[in-house]
Amino acid sequence: MTLSVADLIRLVESQSEDAANNLTALGGVEGVAAALNVQLEHGLDSHNEQDLHQRQTQYGKNYIEPEAPKTILQLMWHAFQDLTMMVLAGAGVVSFVIGFIPFSSKDNKRHLGSDPSTAWIEGAAIMFAVLIVVLVAALNDYQKEKQFRALNAVKEDEKIKVIRNGAPAEVSKFNLVVGDIVRVDLGDIIPADGIVFDENDLKLDESAMTGESDLLKKDRRLAPFLLSGTKVMEGVGKMLVVAVGENSQSGIISKLLLGASKKKKKDTTSTQTPEEDGYGLVSTPKEAVAPIDKKLDEEPNDKEGKSPLQGKLDRLTLVVSKIGLSVALFVFVALAIRFCIVKFWINGESWDRAYMEDLMSHFILGVTILVVAIPEGLPLAVTIALAFSVKKMLKDNNLVRHLNACETMGSATTICSDKTGTLTTNRMTVMQCYVGQEEFSVAQSLRLQASSTTKDILTTSICVNSTAEILPPKQVGAQPEHTGNKTECALLQFAADLGVDYTPVRKALPICHMITFSSAKKRMSVVVPLSESKCRIFTKGASEIVLGLCTSQLRLDGSLSPLGSDEYTRVNENIIEKYA
Image (cartoon, rainbow, N blue to C red; front, side, top):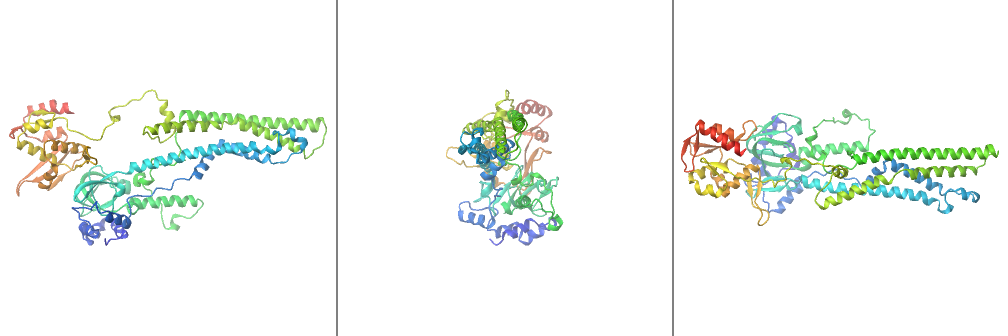
């Protein structure tokens, strides 16, 4: 492989007016493929593990390292930022320090502790309780973050349609390497940077990367480069992968933004201007870089919406804390005033340093009242209860993103759901069809009654006018794997039930032109040459749209009959309306 990572990055970063010339200088997409030791028709060899590993080593993996998770100590520090925890810790430190202050033997009885040698235990117990609360909260956050990082990795691990060993296949997004041939279809998100070829009316939405809202047409002659993170809005095509992971354009932006974020954290007082640094801050749409979006591995310190119970507990804690602080101050001030009146006014004694110990005892009593009044167990009890609920739900394969979701959903009394909430297997099946003025619910019946001409035209239309693929099952006895549009997959399976394999049909009838599906046309058409001077157009789409283009109909015996207005109305009202 003669092209380096830098060469490929420079190629993708070519200006739009120079892109075609730069690609032509390397011999076009064929020349780049040859430099990467790959054939466009055959793709990579999935059995050659050494070659795949070498490509990952030389050009990188299609994976962007996320920001390092917070450590236990960082999470403990975050949990300690709670006002209740800080008040408790302060009270514990004061009580702990006071426990080591030597008191005179005559004042031992006035000290709250019966034994001066154990007076420090009270403060230590308070600080230990704070440590337990902080540690439990930190461990819960750490475990939750770990679970959702793993879940996010599974969510991101999409199956990418590629061509390997000369046949359609699927690979994990993370296993995509430079030199892979990717099949791009309507609705796909481009998984890496690449060069397009074999395209048909391919238009992409690049607003996530460039902010340009208009759809951009891609072709190997004028606009050959596809950028990762952009979405296919129209058309189909293939792509030669040339940059993955951190070397792709979205990966480069991710590294820059993550690096800027780390730099900002390290030096928040820097006054250097963008002009002095040589770089300017560029505003990029949120969808531009997937790794920096809010994902399932959202950091625990992100603000979460409080549930009703948590809101009430927070308000209760605040009210009780205020009352406890007020009572503690009142007790300390009242005891101090009473002590001063009795000693200095009534008894007429003069100030002595030993009296400081008495005032300190009153202060300790006030701190004790404050410590007892603050409900430090409430947040811990709620956290443990919700964490227990999450554990039980986890056993049922229900992963909860926010702990308070358990309490919120637990208070729900009625759940309304429509068809969009129905759980499916993401597979479609042809249940009924209308052919030759007759309806069929079983493919075998149509196979027996239809003539060879009718069956040949029907199955050829299904096989050729489609971009979907049916792959062998991954396990013995399992169903075949469907890739691509699920409706097209169902039609291909229907053709297989009629006894026709789509693969040799596609190879025997090359497509000379394709009109891809769009929401405006509501149909898709392909042009297939029958001879040097004759072609046939196969069209599929919305029933009422396709029916409006028809002038005749094919019968089961292979003959044609005109499609009059009466027949048109009957099919539209009795068949299409019933199937809708």
